[in-house]
Amino acid sequence: MSFGSIEVRDPGPTEILMQIAAAGLNRADILQRKGVYPAPPGVAPDVPGLEFAGHVAACGAAVKGLREGDAVMGISAGAAMATHLVAHEREVMRIPHGMSLLDAAAVPEVFMTAFDALFLQADLSIGQHVLIHAVGSGVGTAALQLACATGAIPIGTSRKADKLERCKPLGLKHGIVTDAELFAERVKEVTGG
Image (cartoon, rainbow, N blue to C red; front, top):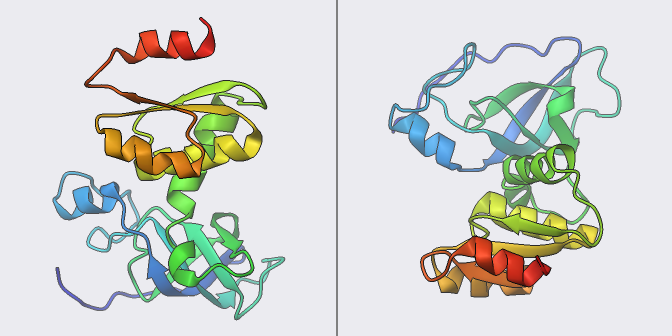
């Protein structure tokens, strides 16, 4: 790992320049540093980071709803582990009142991934059972919280019982240790078939 300088361009009409205060660290960032997960075209290949929190430093002329100084968090294709980042306004959102910049930097990647999987792909609704594999992971715990907030009934799997125990305060209703039992049979039992 090293520190260096890269050029940061001015924001385009619908883009925002942010001064980054914190960045999340995800598995993809680790894999990128190992050289097995290349950055997408147009992204600095040696600056990892998929999620960030900071303050708006400048806005493009067509940006609506955000202004200089606003506390924001967001998701990017990479390079969030820099002091400044330019992103499209659709990739940035205000940080909820009372949430720290440090906490906010760990929200976008896991919660957007979980939201997409649960609601856009699977159309989860109130009262449905939902099976969350690797429930103790970052995306798993985000999915668990979103499922509970929606009134769904979460079933979670893990290879370790202690991870399932740590998920109970987050709302896990049924935990399955995958090394100890066949999860499909347990899911049928929990859901009544």
